[in-house]
Image (cartoon, rainbow, N blue to C red):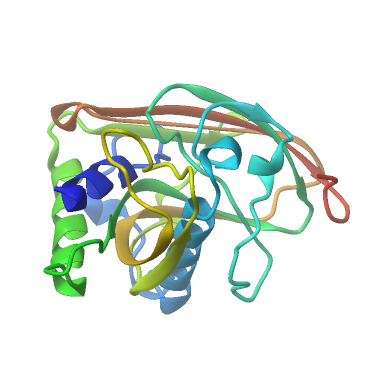
Length: 236
């Protein structure tokens, strides 16, 4: 039962295009590389490592600790992570990030944390693969993403299966509630989803807006980031 819960709550941290996008339009080949897969795993380690009070998936915020979008495990290269909304509510977030940093974040994303003795990587991977296939098959599926009001091209969107990773989940984590009750600890997991990799933004003010809808699954997102890009490391 916990397996289903973790999958359901981990899904779809959304980002999109200005028109509905079929899977065949998602970038393939070299872009769906091992590096992107490693970043997808690294993103989940980052997102699950914070308690609710400072978790980047929870609510609206302004230049708080949730804005620290640096990868946890230090994948080579200058990357900065953004997140969707954990509960699907519309959010607005104001953050500062360093110049010369590539953005990497999920559009549609499902995670499976292995929590029971009868679960393994094959079961976990099948579950996330099936969920993303169901999202893409929704006849009313739509998504949209803009950067400063301009459409993000589909070549910057890739579908990626993560490798098996280990997440360090703290006390008061996003799965810790009377309904789900995931104890703190180390959990192996896998993820599948659509990811956006955007080139560095110029110094100054920028707005990224992303929304998605998969009505048959009862899922939607409506997220806006107001980003200030500065030289050097942003102040905490």
